[in-house]
Length: 51
Image (tube, rainbow, N blue to C red; front, side, top):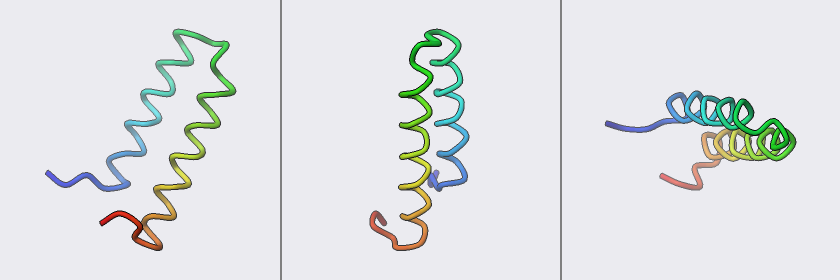
């Protein structure tokens, strides 16, 4: 099975949502980490840092 950005983004969103439900005080950190991860995945799709 090959993992692509289409597979990773929903998983990251699911984990972020669960963490926010468990610990609402983490909202700022979870959102920041989510945005960084999605941005890196998007850049990887363009520039292919990781093959």
